[in-house]
Length: 431
Image (tube, rainbow, N blue to C red; front, top):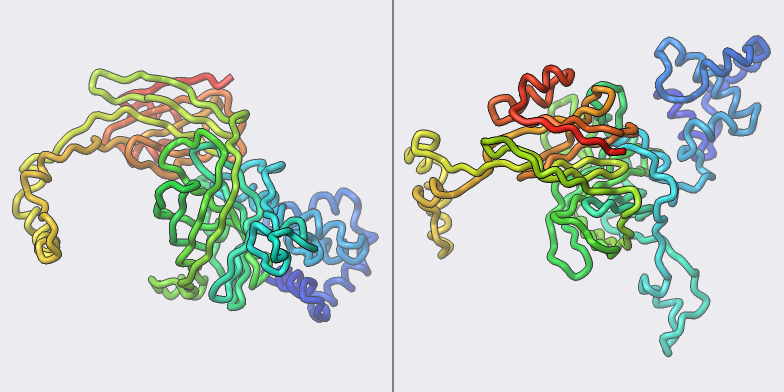
């Protein structure tokens, strides 16, 4: 698709049409009447068609752009047309391909009062607002990079933020794709971010595995969505204060050369103050409170349009001298303890480590009413998060196993295999 992307980029920059594209366009025009309406429909620009159709797709797109006045172009890739607005429509344009995909239409579009944004030119000495633009985008700029918050959604356990990122350095077209499905060829690009977040005046939390997942509009413009998971459920609406201090993205050439450090990395400060509303209409929490004789079970399940969170019941255990010998302790903690003592801190003792309780290793898998497994995203402590990915779910079959079969359960191809690996399972009706 590189030639087609170059063609789109040319349109955006209002440059002359490339000779190769012009020749293809002229060739298509000469033969356009030979294309039946059926043929045109078969080779529309919608994603997912067979590779053998791609040549005709390109040709039909070029002809359609000039014959119908951008009709085919704007339907297939609305964000790529330079004259179409992107802010306020990012969820719409990335929502199908990201990990936590779904229909994000109608979500809160983010703008703030110019006076609230600290626009001194629009505020008189008396404090009255004069000649102000009523609303301004929520934007942060540093290091030649501008982040503009577009839309937001919250299900109470996560805040989903759509944003546009512009960079003077660019390189967005060369960000490698990654798969967002196990069984489908859905891909996205990612710009990763480090920093902190907090709700209102609460404590700052570190961003963990945070990234904007989406696509490049052009080499200097990226649109994507970030999912920020909360440590506890948000009972009411509020404001999320984000402070990004590290932005970076990979390059296909660097990936091919197996470079560890990303080719594009920027350290700075980008602050966004984002208001959100908690969706309590489409989200619900189901109490389960079931467990087996060994203490493995399910406490509750949270269901939203984009994710399912399973809260597990898991017994605690401790390390034994056989699991972790004193020699192993000295090897791991010896140097660390010396540093702690030098810093005036109390060192960790072998006895304290053996007495510390932690959750027994476990894993969870979910299948829907059609026997299809849901995409597991991550798990920590007693929570395991799954992506809904546009599935209409009416029933859940949840399987649980201990550490001896954890990877096998994640990879289970069907419910029968999952059943054989599990030590506990439960079925839930959602309707």
